[in-house]
Amino acid sequence: ADVEGYEPQVMQTAQHLLATRTVSTLQLELTKTPKSKNQTCAAIKMLEHLDALGYDFRQVNQRLVFMPFNGTSWAERTNVWARLPKFPSAAARARAIKHGT
Image: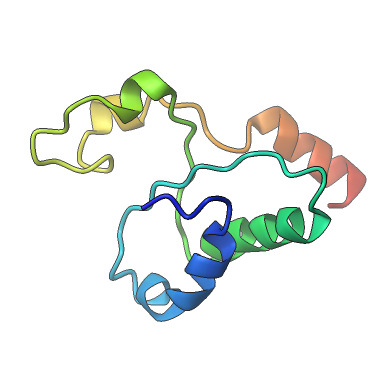
């Protein structure tokens, strides 16, 4: 379901499912929210929490989003999953480390 930018709040509600890894795969759509710093902060905290739980992040373009799965999940489609760029990129991670964020 499209929650129109309220992914952090939805993930907060789903904490137990996420912590127990009942949900193995998530698909999130994240956009920049420069006019809503609180929402940007909530999104960053959500990603940090999911990272701490061991979730792996990838960037998926529109073409792949609508590709039929034939009953498999992203994680099971290792030939596609392994080729997707990591999120955040290595350059973005390096900048964050350099700036202490």
